Amino acid sequence: MRKIKQSVVLALAALLLIMMPVSANASTFPEIIDLPLGFRPEGIAVGRGSTFFTGSLADGRVLRGDLRTGEIEVLVAGQTGMLSVGMTYDRRSDALFVAGGPNGMARVFDASTGELLESYQLAALGNFINDVIVTDQAAFFTNSSAAVLYRLPLGPQGSLPAADGFEILPLSGEWSQVAGFNANGIEATADGQWLVVVNSTVGKLYRVDPWTGAAVEIDLGGESVSSGDGLLFHGSLLYVLRNSLNELVTIDLAEDLTSGVVVDRSGNPNFNVPTTLAAFGDALFAVNAKFSTPPIPSTPYEIVRVELH
View 1: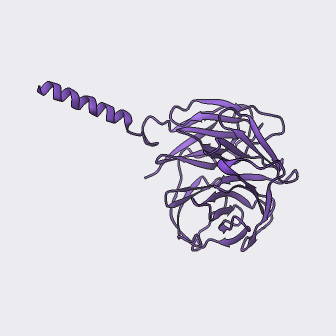
View 2: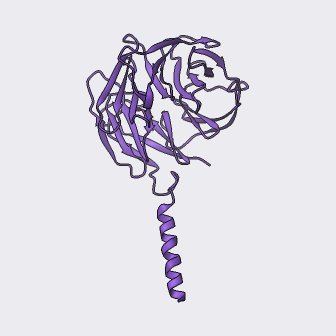
View 3: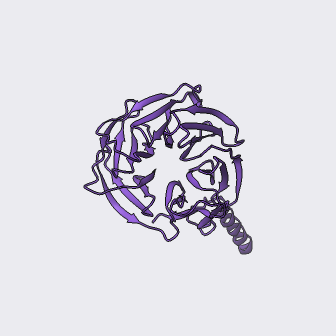
């Protein structure tokens, strides 16, 4: 009788272990995910489960992979003259939104098949469409060359507007536009009430109204986020990647997003000009763009896992 009880307990324990979710800092997750040689990644987004996506500055290719296994495959084939920069995933429609860099474009793909769902010519050639975030109401793209955001209104279940169905939102209020690279990474609060945009050159964060583009500088008490690139809300904190400085900045923002306290600045021995980041479980995953390394066909690139403590 005792042996039967013991076997039942062991069976239940095994079942519970199978059912328990595995956190992203478990030893089963690789610390480094190698990308194809010469790939030149910039953006990263997490899809369903442990699926991730990353795009190429070399030819616009989009890869789909698994953060748990490190396996990757081509989702969207490369094309001459195309670039894939920042990206984000909309779970409602299984769509992947991709900024197009200096071609002034934005593209949206079916994240399961790689089919091009829609293409948007947001700005003239030479404008750098850099990053994108999706809320329940719209997708928002930054332009590092001009003081504007682009708003793509989304319908039920994230349905897309027509190719000309986007709006231009001038960045106004306290926004500071200077020579060089300006608006870069973009994030949104969970309810879509506010956007947060980083200006890489002036080293400041701004709270932006998603309907008007009016910006309020977020007071960081004199702290700088120059070279700020990817932004990510995770829990109650905002993470900022400073690409050329190989630094991850952790900021605790006030509820109204008008001020914040820098609570941590950290590096990682595997960082090599990280640009954007995504979260899965209790870990962050950053793309090494290696902008200071010659982009030749044999240059290795990778995604770096950063455990959160």
